[in-house]
Image 1: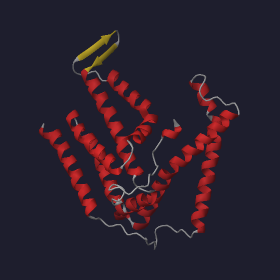
Image 2: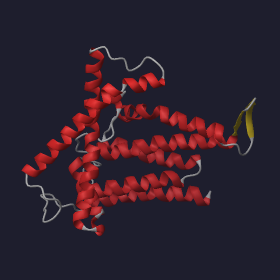
Image 3: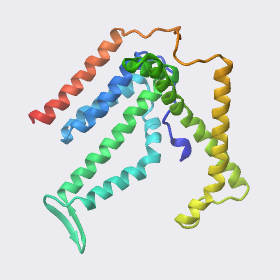
Image 4: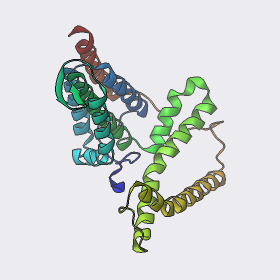
Length: 265
């Protein structure tokens, strides 16, 4: 299950999506998230799914890889849907058994929330899978430039390092779990409290390893004379090209379609 987490991973490639300016991908991802919450009809999600399928196809990313990234959060999605089904009690009553009552609004909201979460995770995963950590840092820094050059660089660096270390910590957790199991540790049997106690031998070495990696990274940055964003230059200067305008145009069609579905239908 731990190996299935794909957040923060990058797949090198030469596709149209890979070659887009990182600012373009970040802005489209942000607007994509907004469009998910604009839609209030299932018809609107047809356009969003079609757009996401087109992006995945052009980026040459295996759908199985995206599905693998969804597996760790299926429980969260199912729990959210179940809570909406039983908590919302408005509209037409569909089912009743004692104190259990299921209403039409609960079913509809549960489906909306499940679809939104799935598309949200898949859409943001495409961003990290097709954009290297360095490109993400440059793109975020340029977009945050209005708040100040040095502050923008530091914020972008912190966010990118945190995102980049997710796969590293996942690998470290998997190694520690295997080592603990080889020594007889049991992470699966017992009740909830027993399972929580069994994680202590896992969390302690994981925290120690995380602090050690952070210290090594800080020493490496100091050894390379890293001094933040002051006076820094770049080998590759970000520039919008025709590919970026095409991407914005395609996404504009999606956003227009969702707005029409929301306000005109």
